[in-house]
Length: 478
Image (cartoon, rainbow, N blue to C red):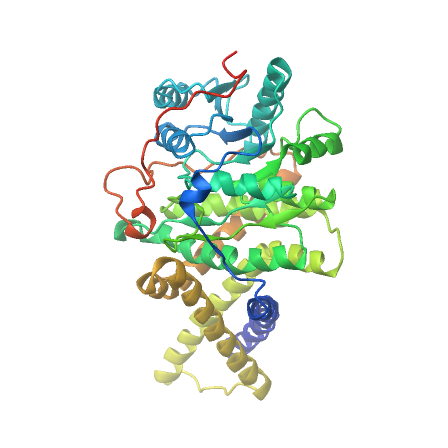
């Protein structure tokens, strides 16, 4: 009986593992082709030249914040110091029932009049999309009141450490015709006691080193990461008109960033993934500590799976040709991946149980049919192939040691995928019966600027320096 169950599980898991492996292989081959033809190269730029450029037009920075008192002050201070542009306005959205975040944000301003604190006229949390809508309304009010029109809007989270050259790079991309531009996100490796949180490193290294590069080059829509991305003012206005509302985002959306990138592409906008390195070999990217506690990791990834795979299917549907359908199918395979992984680990446990039973003489070994044996070896080969890619991309960004750790973390990332996939399906099911879905945000307690952070690869440039405080551009003092 156990042997029959083992064979059935092997057939189910093996077939779906193979489908997923072939999907990934197709993406790998496209990336290799782009690399060979020079279209996937990562160019080098001069950071000092970028930092010295003037913006092509006023820029608005949106930072929504709910219960972010631990990190919002560091983020505000570092952002305003790293981007000393006169024609910049930082809009930070806080809630009226979150006095701690408001106080921390006010203390970080240091008299810089480019900061605008927007207090939401409702209790939090609502959704991030709702908070961004409030910031959009504040920005449009300023434009009308001061006769100023922003050229671009840049999105960041309350825990981000921005790159000093990032704003100029986004501004340049938008000035050259991009309606939406996304920079890489680079999660920071964490200390041994927070080892689990480092698994984001390999995920983003491969996603933003390969998958997003492929999407950008083959003309597929680019999902926004929600941080380190810029949108032209005209594109954001078109999103507002498309909705027939006064704000660009659906308030009930949990992944408004993902939907924003797709919506801009569907509206005919040009999307661009901007991946470049400075002369110091560092990516111009957004950096942050991601959650390290298992409960918080699962909560965050549940929101991603729920918003992209389940609600995203309902909300954005299937648009475009074959390439776009392929990419959206990849985005939405999270719940199926969780199911297949769960079957795989069940199969592994069952195999160990059978091996123990055979060694004790309780039963006889049952040989696998040739088809299942072949399927098993093919999947093992693909697993080795995937492991090689994971190591290579992680080692390129973080060093060989972190690349090795990435390989050892594979079982952990799989367990997280199973847990978050199961939880996302459960939350979605409850939502079908009228249960409200709210901003189930991830708490942030640590910021890279705090004492004790010493990851040389991301701090050797002294990216934490404080620039002299510039005066806001004409009209913004009103």
